[in-house]
Image (cartoon, one colour):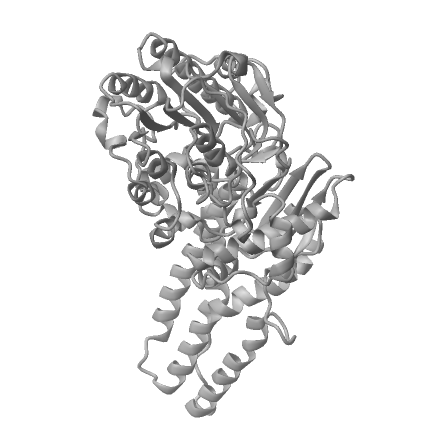
Length: 578
């Protein structure tokens, strides 16, 4: 009941915005009798009714998948309609269509029953008086437009009343939230600061001194490589949540290949994704750059041009590069980011034979790994090859006999992860017979986590926990089987890799070496309009709309809260400057 009560003002504001044009038409129709007012009202009402119904129904499915209400995020994918359709492959389209028809049909009946009965203007009233009355109606809309008579117009924080995220989200009006996001995010202004910048810099310096102009700690790392300049095969695993990886405490038997590699590699078992989308993970991994809670820097090519990139850093040391993806690189603006990075070759969906494009996203991971294996026989060394898998993305439709029973979403997801793991194993068994493998470092890491299994909340640390594994023939025998328990962020992968290669990482100011002595065990991550901080003392998450702590383990400290606020404040200021 509180959800409906608190949401009423935002609903009223949305209705008032929708009513602006009809009341303006009434005013004009009162002055000019030849204006086809009824036809214009009908056309406007049908158009708006269909659009609002579509937005509301789309929000039902997006919230299930993403955990936040509809905003401008889907606009990032408009240039990739095939990928958008693939993402919706697991949606209950029949049920959603039925709900759309009920909602739109109900709106039409309401229109015919109320607006359709609009009486003609009485002759004795006068058109001038009617126009003045309609202008009064327009003026009265100001109050609901602002959500009341208070000094500050209504915003999302006014409907946030609970520490339960779902209750707050349910109170948001979808069309209002979408339009607000499109207007506000176009301005790209950092939110109101939590503290003086001097205080924020002091807090951030405990983890990332270079980001605040402090001197870097003396280079000191535990070397795990048997040679100075090995090849680097950097494999990004789509949606490989730790909840499915047994070697980091997840379900047993879903990723047997990855778990087997962990016994002979260097495993980081407390790694957290910096964000919740593929394009965000890409920037965090390859540029060591933190995510933004309501947008992504990859949307702004002029900003990504100023980011460091592993490809450029390794190219300066003589590495040759290639990037592989079975899908469309235009998706979410990834291609401009990768081209700016300087990859010598990009292989994507269009480079695979039509018969090999056996996934709704493009080429499945088995096809992708076969292509990489064949190309590496001619690849000049040392190489930096990056591969991004896709088969474990929704709709989780993979070309294999089901290994796990069930047709529900979690079972399909589990089978898709198992498929990618098996194809990875097949690829590595063949790669071990190639001469380049003995001189190659494998970096295996997920782009982000997932709410499943367990239906974690959108802001839960469990959703963001991912595996990171260093393996391959270039590892020292003494390093094999090592497990690093340091709590860390996805952004820390870049500096860790560069220090192992004895290359400078000073431009990666938001990244740190996880194999240095005594790294500070803290991870910061962003969800949609909020952040989380994980440390050995516990975890907490803060929502930016209400500026309140939503979830907090009993042992989490105030330092974590202040550190997270400082990180968000300074990283968003850095984003705005780029």
